[in-house]
Length: 206
Image 1 (cartoon, helix red, strand yellow):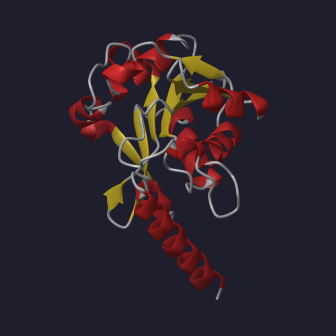
Image 2 (cartoon, one colour):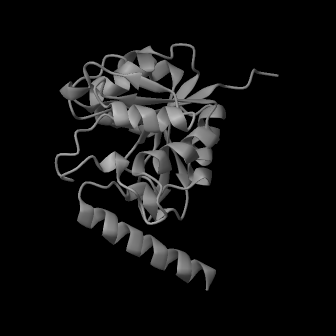
Protein backbone atom coordinates (compact mmCIF):
# COMPACT_ATOMS: atom_id res chain seq x y z
CA UNK A 1 0.00 0.00 0.00
CA UNK A 2 1.42 3.45 -0.92
CA UNK A 3 2.46 5.63 1.98
CA UNK A 4 -0.03 8.28 3.03
CA UNK A 5 0.87 11.61 1.43
CA UNK A 6 1.94 14.31 3.87
CA UNK A 7 0.14 17.55 3.07
CA UNK A 8 1.17 20.82 4.67
CA UNK A 9 -0.67 24.08 5.00
CA UNK A 10 0.95 27.40 4.11
CA UNK A 11 -1.02 30.35 5.46
CA UNK A 12 -0.08 33.61 3.75
CA UNK A 13 -0.21 36.26 6.48
CA UNK A 14 2.38 38.79 5.33
CA UNK A 15 0.17 41.44 3.77
CA UNK A 16 0.41 45.10 4.71
CA UNK A 17 -3.37 45.75 5.18
CA UNK A 18 -3.12 49.04 3.29
CA UNK A 19 -6.74 49.05 2.09
CA UNK A 20 -8.11 48.01 5.48
CA UNK A 21 -6.57 50.99 7.27
CA UNK A 22 -5.39 48.99 10.30
CA UNK A 23 -3.80 45.56 10.92
CA UNK A 24 -6.70 43.57 9.49
CA UNK A 25 -5.39 40.15 10.44
CA UNK A 26 -5.73 41.13 14.12
CA UNK A 27 -9.27 42.46 13.54
CA UNK A 28 -11.81 40.54 15.67
CA UNK A 29 -14.67 38.91 13.81
CA UNK A 30 -18.21 38.98 15.16
CA UNK A 31 -17.41 36.14 17.58
CA UNK A 32 -14.25 37.89 18.82
CA UNK A 33 -11.76 35.64 17.02
CA UNK A 34 -8.98 37.59 15.26
CA UNK A 35 -9.21 37.21 11.49
CA UNK A 36 -5.82 35.52 11.10
CA UNK A 37 -6.60 32.93 13.76
CA UNK A 38 -10.01 32.20 12.26
CA UNK A 39 -8.23 31.48 8.97
CA UNK A 40 -5.52 29.37 10.59
CA UNK A 41 -7.55 27.02 12.78
CA UNK A 42 -9.58 25.18 10.10
CA UNK A 43 -6.46 24.89 7.93
CA UNK A 44 -4.48 23.49 10.84
CA UNK A 45 -7.20 20.92 11.51
CA UNK A 46 -7.29 19.75 7.88
CA UNK A 47 -3.57 19.32 7.09
CA UNK A 48 -0.65 17.44 8.63
CA UNK A 49 1.23 20.59 9.60
CA UNK A 50 0.95 24.33 9.11
CA UNK A 51 3.25 27.32 8.65
CA UNK A 52 2.04 30.91 8.86
CA UNK A 53 4.23 33.12 6.66
CA UNK A 54 4.51 36.58 8.22
CA UNK A 55 6.56 39.74 7.92
CA UNK A 56 9.54 39.59 10.34
CA UNK A 57 8.51 42.81 12.06
CA UNK A 58 4.92 41.70 12.73
CA UNK A 59 5.46 40.70 16.34
CA UNK A 60 1.84 41.00 17.48
CA UNK A 61 0.68 38.62 14.76
CA UNK A 62 3.52 36.24 15.55
CA UNK A 63 2.51 36.20 19.21
CA UNK A 64 -1.13 35.51 18.32
CA UNK A 65 -0.16 32.53 16.21
CA UNK A 66 2.39 31.12 18.65
CA UNK A 67 -0.03 31.43 21.56
CA UNK A 68 -2.48 29.22 19.65
CA UNK A 69 0.03 26.63 18.47
CA UNK A 70 0.47 27.92 14.93
CA UNK A 71 4.15 27.87 13.85
CA UNK A 72 5.32 31.08 12.18
CA UNK A 73 7.79 31.55 9.37
CA UNK A 74 9.16 35.10 9.07
CA UNK A 75 9.79 35.93 5.42
CA UNK A 76 12.32 38.76 4.92
CA UNK A 77 11.23 39.16 1.29
CA UNK A 78 7.48 39.29 1.99
CA UNK A 79 7.25 42.96 1.01
CA UNK A 80 8.22 41.96 -2.55
CA UNK A 81 4.88 40.24 -3.13
CA UNK A 82 2.76 37.20 -2.44
CA UNK A 83 4.91 35.06 -4.70
CA UNK A 84 7.89 35.49 -2.38
CA UNK A 85 5.77 34.45 0.62
CA UNK A 86 4.65 31.28 -1.16
CA UNK A 87 8.24 30.52 -2.18
CA UNK A 88 9.39 31.04 1.39
CA UNK A 89 6.90 28.48 2.70
CA UNK A 90 7.70 25.94 -0.01
CA UNK A 91 11.45 26.17 0.51
CA UNK A 92 10.98 25.71 4.26
CA UNK A 93 9.13 22.41 3.74
CA UNK A 94 10.91 20.36 1.06
CA UNK A 95 9.80 17.03 2.53
CA UNK A 96 6.08 17.67 1.99
CA UNK A 97 4.17 15.66 -0.61
CA UNK A 98 1.92 18.63 -1.25
CA UNK A 99 0.78 21.98 0.07
CA UNK A 100 -2.51 23.77 0.61
CA UNK A 101 -1.86 27.48 0.17
CA UNK A 102 -4.41 29.59 2.04
CA UNK A 103 -4.90 33.30 2.63
CA UNK A 104 -5.12 34.71 6.15
CA UNK A 105 -7.74 37.25 5.10
CA UNK A 106 -10.25 34.51 4.16
CA UNK A 107 -11.48 33.57 7.64
CA UNK A 108 -14.83 31.97 6.87
CA UNK A 109 -13.82 28.91 4.81
CA UNK A 110 -15.12 25.71 6.33
CA UNK A 111 -12.79 23.01 7.59
CA UNK A 112 -14.51 20.33 5.50
CA UNK A 113 -13.90 22.40 2.36
CA UNK A 114 -10.17 22.40 3.07
CA UNK A 115 -10.31 18.69 3.88
CA UNK A 116 -11.83 18.11 0.45
CA UNK A 117 -8.88 19.83 -1.22
CA UNK A 118 -6.43 17.85 0.92
CA UNK A 119 -8.09 14.57 -0.02
CA UNK A 120 -7.81 15.36 -3.72
CA UNK A 121 -4.05 15.84 -3.27
CA UNK A 122 -3.78 12.60 -1.31
CA UNK A 123 -5.62 10.85 -4.14
CA UNK A 124 -3.03 12.01 -6.67
CA UNK A 125 -4.23 15.37 -7.98
CA UNK A 126 -1.49 17.66 -9.24
CA UNK A 127 -3.63 20.72 -8.49
CA UNK A 128 -6.80 20.96 -6.42
CA UNK A 129 -9.24 23.69 -5.47
CA UNK A 130 -12.80 24.11 -4.18
CA UNK A 131 -15.54 25.00 -6.65
CA UNK A 132 -18.75 26.85 -5.80
CA UNK A 133 -21.32 28.84 -7.75
CA UNK A 134 -19.59 28.17 -11.05
CA UNK A 135 -16.09 29.28 -10.18
CA UNK A 136 -12.90 28.23 -8.48
CA UNK A 137 -11.99 29.52 -5.04
CA UNK A 138 -9.41 29.22 -2.28
CA UNK A 139 -7.45 27.53 -0.86
CA UNK A 140 -5.51 25.89 -3.66
CA UNK A 141 -3.64 22.62 -3.29
CA UNK A 142 -0.35 21.89 -5.07
CA UNK A 143 1.35 18.51 -5.33
CA UNK A 144 5.08 17.95 -4.94
CA UNK A 145 5.98 18.07 -8.66
CA UNK A 146 4.99 21.75 -8.64
CA UNK A 147 7.33 22.50 -5.73
CA UNK A 148 10.28 23.72 -7.84
CA UNK A 149 8.08 26.20 -9.71
CA UNK A 150 6.47 27.40 -6.48
CA UNK A 151 9.88 27.86 -4.85
CA UNK A 152 10.94 30.49 -7.40
CA UNK A 153 7.77 32.57 -7.43
CA UNK A 154 8.15 36.33 -7.35
CA UNK A 155 5.94 39.40 -7.44
CA UNK A 156 2.31 39.84 -6.44
CA UNK A 157 0.65 37.41 -8.84
CA UNK A 158 1.02 34.51 -6.45
CA UNK A 159 0.70 31.15 -8.18
CA UNK A 160 -1.74 32.22 -10.91
CA UNK A 161 0.67 31.44 -13.74
CA UNK A 162 1.34 27.95 -12.39
CA UNK A 163 -2.39 27.30 -12.09
CA UNK A 164 -3.02 28.58 -15.63
CA UNK A 165 -0.24 26.45 -17.08
CA UNK A 166 -1.69 23.32 -15.46
CA UNK A 167 -5.40 24.10 -15.76
CA UNK A 168 -6.12 20.84 -17.58
CA UNK A 169 -4.86 18.93 -14.54
CA UNK A 170 -6.78 20.93 -11.94
CA UNK A 171 -9.20 18.82 -9.90
CA UNK A 172 -12.19 20.51 -8.29
CA UNK A 173 -13.83 19.84 -4.95
CA UNK A 174 -17.51 20.81 -5.46
CA UNK A 175 -18.98 22.53 -2.42
CA UNK A 176 -21.60 24.99 -1.21
CA UNK A 177 -19.06 27.07 0.72
CA UNK A 178 -19.44 30.63 -0.59
CA UNK A 179 -16.59 31.72 1.68
CA UNK A 180 -14.06 30.29 -0.80
CA UNK A 181 -14.58 33.56 -2.70
CA UNK A 182 -14.50 35.79 0.37
CA UNK A 183 -11.26 37.70 0.84
CA UNK A 184 -11.39 40.70 3.17
CA UNK A 185 -9.69 43.86 1.87
CA UNK A 186 -11.69 46.60 3.61
CA UNK A 187 -13.85 46.98 6.74
CA UNK A 188 -16.89 47.14 4.45
CA UNK A 189 -15.93 43.75 2.99
CA UNK A 190 -15.87 42.28 6.48
CA UNK A 191 -19.28 43.63 7.44
CA UNK A 192 -20.82 42.59 4.13
CA UNK A 193 -19.47 39.06 4.21
CA UNK A 194 -20.35 38.46 7.84
CA UNK A 195 -23.92 39.57 7.12
CA UNK A 196 -24.17 37.51 3.95
CA UNK A 197 -22.77 34.35 5.49
CA UNK A 198 -24.94 34.69 8.59
CA UNK A 199 -28.00 35.05 6.37
CA UNK A 200 -26.92 32.06 4.31
CA UNK A 201 -26.44 29.90 7.40
CA UNK A 202 -29.90 30.87 8.65
CA UNK A 203 -31.41 29.89 5.29
CA UNK A 204 -29.68 26.49 5.34
CA UNK A 205 -30.93 25.79 8.88
CA UNK A 206 -34.49 26.72 7.89
